[in-house]
Image (cartoon, rainbow, N blue to C red):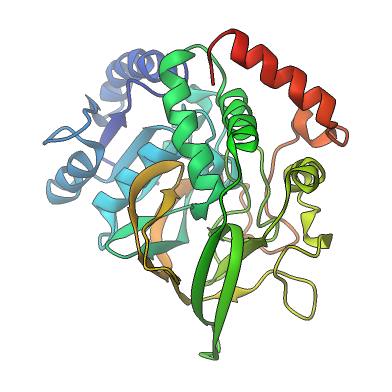
Length: 359
């Protein structure tokens, strides 16, 4: 594929130092690319202002860049997508962050040099993009329990800067587990691809995950058949689930076999509901927590969710095949083979975390 000018947007805080290491590789690659006629500009992101990833991506679109390389995790990719929506500029998402759920799903190589090689040897595919109120997401939007976990995982990054993302997520999960579960009374209006609608009043909801991709948090397959190219979003709603049942739920959620639990809202065929539009509102008129692609957003009383089919171009390996429910990619991890969690084991882990003041 012919690309003349590339902007690399690098999150220096991504993935236990991976961001800065990636930036050094980008600078080295820049010189080699110039010899082949490819102009590469690399920028380190800042939290806000002209150098935030959203504005850098907008700048790339306005100034004729042929490709944006997102060097970070799902959160960095989220910002880049919010800067490119409405344009035809494709994105290459490098696996530099903690979870990298979307990049894994589309088959991006873990090795940075191999991933950059897709500029020569890859191809462009179009993927769906979700929208919540006024912001876009590429992988997942969640409310309730998983949003609280994501929030504490962000805090843990400051305490444990060298810890892997999966570990941070598990520590945050156990902290929320012992900190007292919170349930939410929510009203849902769902419209499917055939434009059929239904209204649901769901009381004591543990979490709702609105999924474009199959995994979140790096290891959890809450929507195991979610396909970011099918024009719909999969809805995983977990009704009230107590602590003991969560011990059974977690290993199943990692493996993607939790749909067998009665607390999971399912269609008559046993699959998760799939929607093109959804509103989720508090029945008590109170703001409730949310996360988007792993990033915490301000809590609101209502969220309006829609999908834009095949709205974002992404650079993927030439071997990539259009996804269907049977071929959605997830990587093997040691977590998939964990046994049923035992309460005593979780308590010992909690005591360890308390000893080192991580809770």
